Length: 555
Ligand SMILES: *Cc1c(COP(=O)(O)O)cnc(C)c1O
Image (cartoon, rainbow, N blue to C red):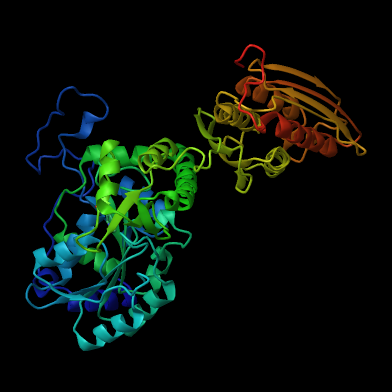
């Protein structure tokens, strides 16, 4: 043990409950080994049916399963020794208090209205509770918190950022100053919603402040509320003490399997795109909810929920119950206030209907997403045909990113696209599969194509000419005329240019014709992508009427 680690251990023992500091941890099973295990009175047989998942169900899991801890270490960017995994962030909060707060002696500090479980967990443990309410803007009252810390002996300050239910984040510098000014007080920051925030997690400064504890959860951003997994991130000395209090086997094997699956590299692009959707929907709710006559006020949010004040509480509840929509009633803590979670675009549309917001009042944007996972690639893409402001493309191929940006920019659409592909082999799969996913998203966003222009034709005139014609007919067809003078532009093979548009025409259901002339391959490819973007613009844009642009009435 290094001196620093020994110092930290002495310090942590000194602030823990004496009984916890004093005993040796229950010796639970460590990681399974290949020994013949006759040490834990387990069944030698796995339960039927003995599929691959059940193979190890007869063996107790490790208290902190090593493979899972390694994955979480990667996810949160901190060493495994700084992580305690439990049954949700709730258990991490509970274990923290049971480790450090002596019943009837130690106090915690909270800033209500905040996460209700802080209060409950403290009461269960018998800790005293000092309350410093948020100010009128629902910000932490920094001066009052500092004063309360001088006037009282506080073992744990419990903060939540972004705060539930108010949705706002706490200033990073304030948290740091609390850590410095109160070296023997634990500063807990519950970051259950930090994935939704523009502010980054404080997890990257745990190494600098040994009294800082962060809780994170897989329940919200990663969709695993039903699986129960969340963590405390802190100095290893704090974590070691908490592991004495955490039950011996808190992470069932099926939980480990479910978490590993949901956090597989192939799933991460899906999480990223969903977060994009979530944030875009939060913006839409923030813009649209004030149009309801039932709502008096809404509050900005860094989280996946919005706090609001009702104009007429009874009418609001009645309107929602007619649509069988439930929201969280906060009136016992903040008079007249409710909390609404951000749902899918369809769910939020239903909410708007329930709140009497008409279709014309809702910005009716054509948004779609597509996910494509094959052995070679993992792709997630989201397009918004009516809001070009969000363009972020990451395929690992700089030139290709730049070309896709040309389509987005000249097509006047928002595109967020992530592709993790087998680039170590070559770019073929990444380019082809990106075209297929992008085309599928465009097709879905176009929906029934009501009101669109359908056709587009362009001929940019510089030293390189690309003539592009597009018909969003629903029928794939592709014609390409052009000879590239060289085979590659950087790592991008020139032949992948027509191949991209062939795949796009198939997935989008469009006829695409391209003639390109020139004597520089880079410029020629760029002209193709720009030209397709330009031709798509009138083809996808909606006119004043919502007619289907076909004599047949459908396309
Ligand atoms: C939802 C929530 C949690 C619960 O996390 P679990 O990991 O599901 O236990 C913790 N803290 C806050 C502030 C929450 O809103």
